[in-house]
Image (cartoon, rainbow, N blue to C red; front, top):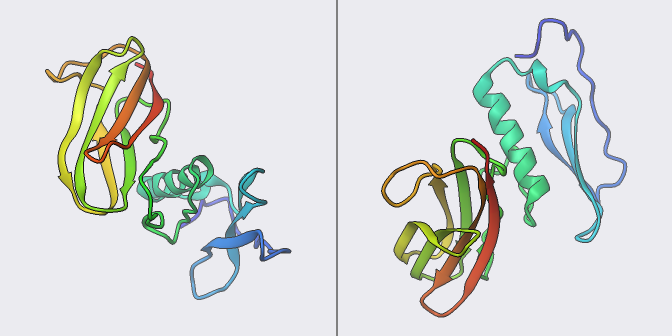
Amino acid sequence: GGANNQTSTDALVIRDSTTATTIFHYGGGTALPAGVRVAIDSTQAKAVFLGFGYEAINDADKRKTLMDRVLTYLLQQIPVSINDPEPAISQRLELFQNYPNPFNPSTQIRFNLPASEKVTLTIYNVNGQKVRTLLDGIQPAGLHQIRWNGTNQQGQPVASGIYLYELRTASGQRQVKKLILIR
């Protein structure tokens, strides 16, 4: 369902399959790659190339899904594509960068637990004051996703600014990342 002004498809060609993979094909049973992701290595750049204009996607939900997954791939350390609904499960505790970031009105925070245990996910302001506890309890092993809507523990909107989110486990592990709220 592309834009009315696009009458032909632009297929992409993968030159080096060790660094590039197809993440999106044109429909209709064709094998024409419409999206390709490239990762040189873990210390260099990542890129996503689309063989069509982003505005050519008429369906707003599909446009958002594509952009979410492209940005997730680019911003996180784990491979994600339009065809993969979730990142691969890691065997270690991992707190991922929230998305979107900066955000308004809400953002998603993902983390991976290698084993079931009690975890706490807390938002702090830059002064170290607790703003909100998003999660406090036993969680099963695997990937988890929590949405924060930019409110404090009482449900009131917090001010624009930089906040920290901390994932703490009962076994003593702790990871912290920064997020930005723009009102």
